[in-house]
Each structure stands twice: as structure tokens, then as C-alpha cells.
Length: 80
Image 1: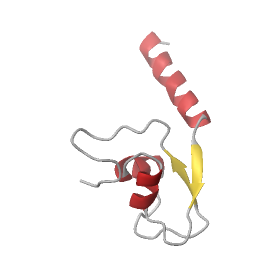
Image 2: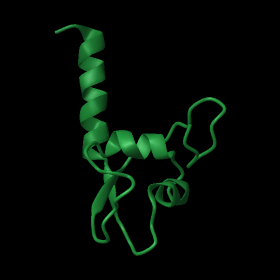
Image 3: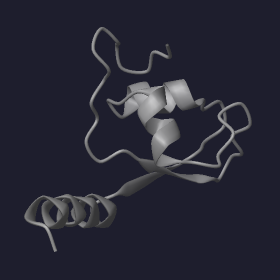
Image 4: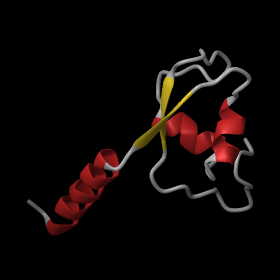
């Protein structure tokens, strides 16, 4: 296996193992959850493929991105 591929796979495994979740509460939106947890809505969408951000159900467990990195020029929770 190539060293750089092994490093990428190792990082992916650690990020998946360290992933945490948040449970949707009444009044939560993806943007509010992103701001509350120091990440972006875009990162939240990437961490939760298949979740419709316009239809969050109370009690749904959403994954939080493990390493929040806002896009250049973007504030946490802001969508492009």
C-alpha cells in the first residue's frame, strides 16, 4: 500500500472513530446546530449525507464533523 494512502486511511479511521453526535431538539435547524458546535452548515451536510436539512426531525441523531474548517471567507454556520 502507498504511504500517503495509508496515512489518509488512518486519518479517516480516526475521524470516524472520534465522531460524535447531537440529537435534534425542538427548534433546532442545521445552521443553529452548526453555530452551536463551532462548525458550518456545509460541514454538517457533508457529515450527514442523506439528511434533508430542511426537514430535521426531533430525536434524530446527527453526526458532528470532527474537525470543523470553515471555508475561506465563510463564518461558522453560514451557507454559501
